[in-house]
Amino acid sequence: MLCLTLITYLSFVVQISFVTIAVAAGLYYLAEFVEEYTVLSKKIIWWMNSGSLIIYILLWLFEGFPLLLVSCGILAQVSHFVILTDFPYISFLSPSFLIAIAFIVINHYLAFDHFGNVMYSFSELMAYFTLCLWLVPFALFLSLSANENALPTVRETSDGDVVSNYFSKKEKKYGLLSLFNYAKEAILPHQSKKGF
Image (tube, rainbow, N blue to C red; front, top):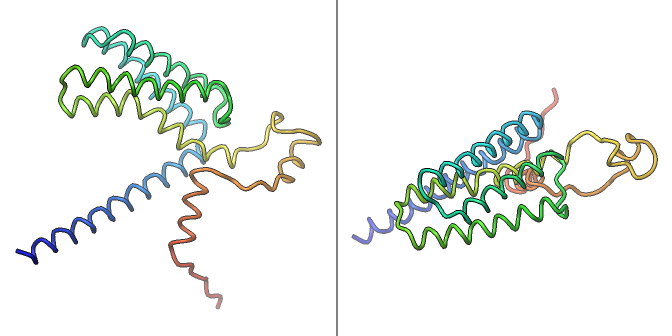
């Protein structure tokens, strides 16, 4: 009995590590995709945001969700549309970003309050949280790495021309893709190419 228990715990650790590696690889791929195809990523996020907006309206019309929950959800989706106007440039101190963060917190509070009072199945609960609360903010979070390698524009210039200002910046990049690249370099061994 002790041996089977130890094998069970060992297999649980192996399964968690495989799932963690799979999720990290998927996030890395999505961050690369957003960085390479910013226009397509903006369209995909726009359609996801539109879908969430339609879901809120349908939940109010057919499921009788509270008007406060639905209206805050709709305002959150509108704030995401405002963030998308400057995509891929997302400023953490912009009013639209701060309002979107505030609506994320408010929507979670209202959702926990509603689902605490009305009984729903776990799958219905997860469907609501995934499609209405987490999908678009997670996509915007992944798109933060697209800002790092975007081509320079006139908005970024402080003095001088666009190209010299772009190449004179020696700032360290802080984004999701930079975090993944750092983790890849720190964890995986480096292989040197042999020249013949």
